[in-house]
Amino acid sequence: MDESRHLRYQDNEGSRFYRAGRLSPEDTWRALGDELARVLMDAQRVFWRGRLGMTPERVRWWHGAIFARHFPYGGGHFRQERAYFGLVTADGGMRQIEGSSPDTLHRDLAEVCATFNGGIERLGKRNASVLEQTRVAGAMYAGILRVHPFADGNHRTGFVALSAALWSLGLPAVEFTRDGDMTDHDDAVAPALFSPDGDIEPFAWLLATRIEHAKRAAT
Image 1 (cartoon, rainbow, N blue to C red):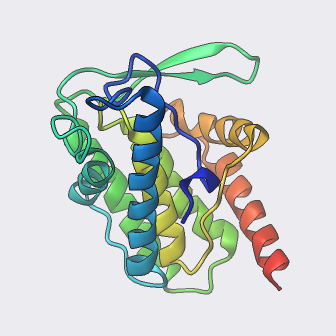
Image 2: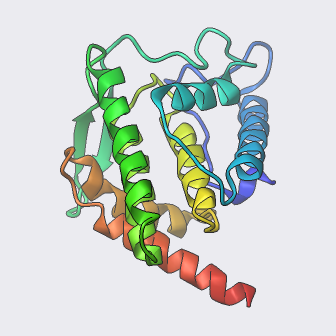
């Protein structure tokens, strides 16, 4: 699996994953892209139409699998400090969001995982639509981003979780490869990140629309 077909991540100088050892920033980005591709392939193999039980430990393990080889002191460790991230608002402004506090981070992430697991259990009791399934998977993804359990690397880890969730439901992973795709992604997921009760519907619709398009293209 070519990582370049998925969300493109290039760490800035403020990230602890900007440069690994003697590697240049560009080589570090490529190396982490290779690790992300490997983790995605493993997740697809393990969870395709299989049971995915989400836990904070699984999220932490995915983060370590992506980053720990090149950043052993940063990969796979929940943060111990406060964290903030920026969101572009509908009027083009910027809003700063604080992730969960270090004291509540594990509890908040466990709640995100439990909500996903409960949602999957309810979906299994009926013939759910694609949109119903993407609501559950998308809410888990947005929850990981909102909790922001790691100092850096939350989007990559969240993308693995989202892909694994979709694969476990027998759905294709959704790829955001072009700049326009990234804009659509950011605009759709932002309403779900403003608060724990944020609106997941725009992002669920984006996922469902792209999945339906991919299914039609494959037939």
